[in-house]
Image 1 (cartoon, rainbow over the protein chains, first blue to last red):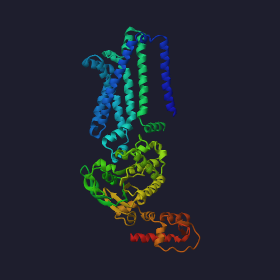
Image 2 (cartoon, rainbow over the protein chains, first blue to last red; image 1 turned 180 degrees about the vertical axis):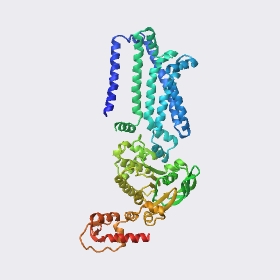
Image 3 (tube, rainbow over the protein chains, first blue to last red; image 1 turned 135 degrees about the horizontal axis):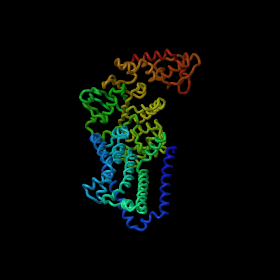
Image 4 (cartoon, each protein chain N blue to C red; image 1 turned 90 degrees about the vertical axis):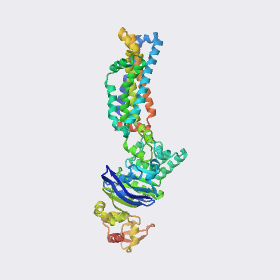
Length: 249
Length: 320
């Protein structure tokens, strides 16, 4: 392990430590009282929040990965520029503005919130899919083709496994970002833990604020962990070790 | 057997990357495609497994026209080795080697046995490498694995595009010798692209020299060195071609053709297997007047002088 990695690991755990200390302090102060007083309501909002994140992220992954594959096929190369720019546009518009636009045309409710989050998370997945597929050594594709792989075998056995790292990283970025953005869903009646947070803002109640904000933070950290774990089991060991040696050199 | 018949590749309807090339590579031979970069040698190689489509003309493998076959099936029956080895970093060495058999639907046991067989053939311990990944291997080992992979489904024909080009000179000459040893056993028909005349002489049963897409000469290496067909070939093989051709002959060849003089004085001993290029450098470097040829049992057979080498070279060049 290099020094750089040691430092980054240290900083990460240091940050987790601060969060934990804050968590304990807030707990002792009784700032989580809402969670215990309104447990059913809390669980309902939590479930809603997770559902918002999951549905919008799955939609984004389901659209962005195939789109990324499509624009990197030789026949559709010309689409790469317009598609990436369209996705960029989705990211450039502030999330609040997207919500406003979505509310104007789709009305309020869960579906509108999901749609807004979906638009917002397409870009990281798409950009990383395209970058990942483009970074696969052309010699590998040539070798595969020369040995008699069909186009789909080249895609699934050579290109996708070798682009797995950046693709997984894109999904992770999108989902973690989504956990935060989903707190805004309350504004369009989408529910989620934003309900507590905005109630807390309006009522200037620390109990509501903390009972909403801390679970959102923990949820983001949990999802980050979970996806890092999935990354470890889906990305080939051969790539992981070569990434480590590349980092070390 | 591979037959090229008036093969032409035209890009954009005007530039001929390969221009009306015809020749035949006999079964079990290595034909080296030689020439400066941009001469069309790699394009011609890639036309054999149809990675580059043929504009005009035909290529036959064992009498079958390649254009009449299914592209994918054709490629699975041709071994393919490239310069940057092209091993898949996400797969273990075993999965890399057995990738074509897997495409062909072999069962697990057959693939495992084949993997062990191939690793023995290329001189790497199968159990040491099975579960490792390409990036853990040295360049020479990776290229050996690349060759094993190309031979996995036992294809009769192999295409090798500068397979040793990225290796340092010592490992390269080591792998060249090793590969010739393997070739003696497996007897594949091999097309081998190179830009190195020395490599071509060492590896080739035949050498095809290209310039601007046209075939300049197609002959055995010693014929090319002795009788270059034109100015280009003569310049390309170099003014030291006589010395290069010495590398193709051994002391045994010389002894067979010339009478050796009986041993007059004690001198440095040389074996029958030594090639004449080495003999020449021994003469120059170590300053002997004559060298003593010994047979397998180390019994002196006679001695040779630098004039004998000169005489031998002269005679063979005239007969060639």
